[in-house]
Amino acid sequence: MKKFFTLIASILLAGVMQAQTIPNASMEVWQDFTGPTYTQPEFWNTPNPYTAMLGESVVTRSTDAFAGDYSARLETKSLLFDQFRAPGLITLASFMVNIITYEYTFTGGIALNEKVLSLSGKYKYTGVSNDSASVFMYCYRNEGGNLDTIGMGSLFLHDAADWTSFNLNMYYLSDHQPDTFNVIIMSSGITSLTPGSVLLIDSLNAETNVGIFDLEANPIQVHCYPNPAGDFVTFDSPESANQRFITFFDLQGKKVSEHPFFGQSVRIDVSPYSSGTLLYRVTDSNNGLATGTLVIQ
Image (cartoon, rainbow, N blue to C red; front, side):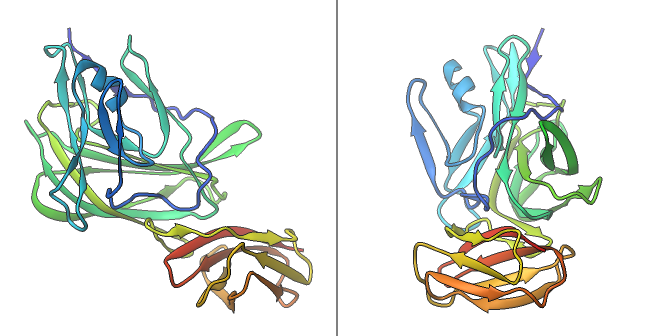
């Protein structure tokens, strides 16, 4: 009887990556591992640590890229003479595989202070026996140890011989602010898992309620205080920068104001603003990015 690596729908609580951007979205940076031997895109997790013990990798680096030098190649494979099957899969979450039931348990994701509205990217796909690739995303909030699922989205990708665009919208279940976001991309459907189905993924991009969430941005170290703020708020950074700005948005994504932040510290008068919550976004000319939430008292 064949056994299939399957997804566990429940999301478990664990420490999340402390980052405000999704790293390595262009799939340009790869890490090599030994014992067992495999490679995978930096900052992404794959089934390779488990399948490599059986001499196979379901995620590999491909020189067939939409942009840059590489893309991620995901292939559904039959393992141990088809005793079980595993999809090519990349995710920003940590996950464990139960080697008895072959179930994945996903844990955590990317920490953020924005609402992701959509995820887009480029793909090529060859599905075997009408198989379809899968793209999932979700966001949730940790409420005192309980996880509140705030939004989710899913999309199935079909055969495409040339690089093709996809766009997945997030469906929000409530108006609460999420604190964790994750992406799961697979070379097959949830239950089909047809060996030989191949998905190439490249050039991911996400849009949030404060604009484009640049997946290739360089994180900027920024300290915002006091928070909550009264009449003034100060932003500090270890480094000075030319053409660096702080932009404030309301919770609907409308731009409120923009302020230069060229030195290592800037003090901003927030007394004209009404009490409540603002989102801030710090950008510079080197594709740097920092985001966060500021409460005005």
